[in-house]
Length: 109
Image 1 (cartoon, rainbow, N blue to C red):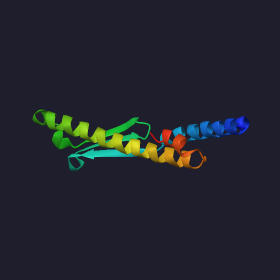
Image 2 (image 1 turned 90 degrees about the vertical axis):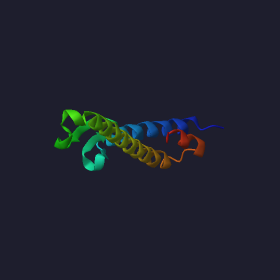
Image 3 (image 1 turned 60 degrees about the horizontal axis):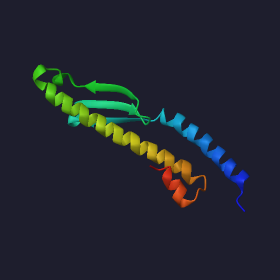
């Protein structure tokens, strides 16, 4: 027989841990760098951009396209790092709950 109360308790634990993880992700910051450090983008693991740094040498009209490309690259790197940080938190969350292997895999994506 299925233990409904046990499943409900486990669901409540998961919900509580998910909220805790969301709070933690807001405090985890990553940085994406491009152009050998000419452009840097800082964001949280929840994908909130916190800052952008641009080397003054790129602040010329003729460098506009280079700057645009470096910004895209830096944002992409920061996003990948943020996603990796989120996955790591999710794995630590679902690993501690004793969920069946198939179910815990759903939370890692």
